[in-house]
Image (cartoon, rainbow over all chains, first blue to last red):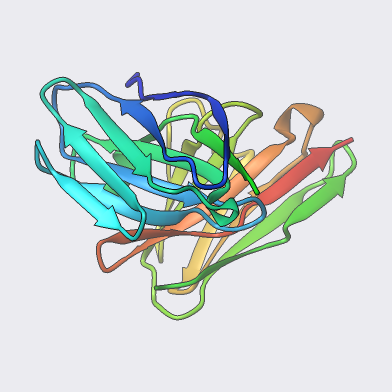
Length: 113
Length: 113
């Protein structure tokens, strides 16, 4: 059983704060690391797919980094807004097939105005 | 992006009855769809891979006679929980790949009384 750990479990910040959370995964047999954003009562939405060690990806105020050698990825949100409130999931893949995606439990972010 | 729609969003049923959940790809064809289950405070766990026109592939520990999957068309997969019991109460969610990304339905919360 592969272990994908996310921390913290939940986070409460004020509007304007910058924040980051961690996803740790097995460092062997790495193929890809996915980040998803999941708002309550909506579908999880893909943020990033990261494949190369040292990868950095950015989408607006959200960015992510990847370290495959030590088995972790960070997700950063700059200047958090209430609309950023969601659960952020990471998922590790050891090959190109989606059936091998292993999800973390998620980090629940609440941004207060 | 592509859209996956899942119905119903929530369902309450009596113990011993069967419940069907539908997962539709609205604007693309999906030869493969994935069904997951999520218990409270746990991660998404893959139950089965649904294959259009052929039998589903079930993950270890998932009873195929209890969780019937039908993928009769390129846009529809159904999951039927047969003879549901309270321990089947959970959150069920589907996904389908399209153009290198995984798109999720909104999920279905099943409560078995």
